[in-house]
Length: 377
Image (cartoon, rainbow, N blue to C red):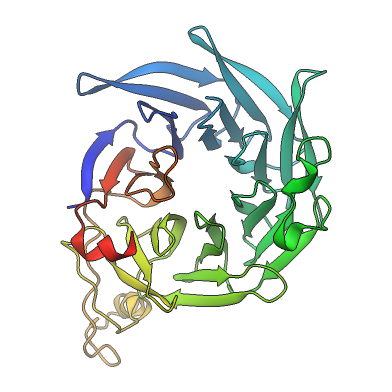
């Protein structure tokens, strides 16, 4: 099995992030706190508790270079935490939101971070040395609903967003005085802050997790309609593919390599997607092998549900050849809402990653010995 470590850290976990050396993990136990644990002698010890928010912490990210933590919460606030001595000291971020902050992520150069919100707004935040605080520039009037996920392009300028209006968008976040002039390349070369590069209307349902590939050539995002979308050549003429699967929807996604993607969600079991030599993406398998898929036959979780509702057999008319729904039991016992790559410094691939969910577990997975996936790494 690909799971190499299972850690029960809370009753339920909203989000998690790892320290730069992967020795500590920050988790939100579905409340207004962030707990930082360190593994000491095969036992997790709680080292710090970050207490500043008034409501549930919905996003946390730990910068790899500067060792800073950024948090976002339903209380409409965000804080940047710096380790001073043995204490984590918060710095307030001026977000100017009137709805909950839902997600947050550092940019690759860590001179900015982005916060998605229920106010149909994205805040791009940067540090003002003179005032010793973080201020934000807002991307307004572009989304028709809540922004559920944000993802930075490797060039530190392009920002992808997913929203419950069903769309994925890519914006320029160039900020004069923060980003060097020569940083604008490709489709963002002449764009100003907040300018929309492309809007993708591939999903007809809520859109959740979105990520760029390590090279930035491919964008992937997931929809609540049990589909995952892949977009190449993001710009005026993007090339898009969609992969449908018969299982429950995904909530988040990461690129392990240029040709291998892991999706996590309501099925409690990470799903593996791969691209062949022609660049055609497809569903490969569940990561936990003990559960097998029924192959190309789609369908019938809705039929089964209606069958139960009306007292019909789930093997009745229209369900010939369709296997019953699998039991959801496995390493995770409730849906997975967060997946984080454990990428070593200087490497573009990440054979290890971690997942967390509403069962309160943080699970570390390793693809190193998955022989059937070696061609995709």
